[in-house]
Amino acid sequence: MLFKMILDSSGDEERPIVRGFLKHLIAGFAGGLLIGAVGLFLVLVTLGNLKLDIPVVFIAAMMLQFGPIGGFVGVGIYLSRITDRTRDDDDESDEGPGGGTKVRVETPVKTRAAPIRLKPARA
Image (cartoon, rainbow, N blue to C red; front, top):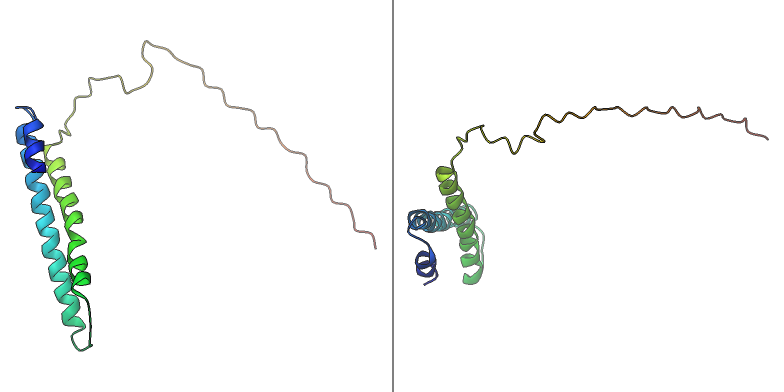
């Protein structure tokens, strides 16, 4: 329902981007759950000789904690694919002041502190 609302609110130009975003979010979440299940299986196989009385809620929590992480990874992969990294260097607005303004740089004069004079201790 939420994904349908997101798709409906996007414009015609944004729809393929949003669709890919949501696909990668779901695929990443599913991949995270798979990694969580494999990790849980490995933990239970490794600790198989121990008598573990783990409630089902904790088992589900161990698996589900990998889901959102996988979703973020999936979204990050998708965003890195669609981001245009080949920008033209014609845009000079980020390079500082324009118009040929040159400011003279003056280095501050460092004042030297007077040496500390120690007095002999009196007995």
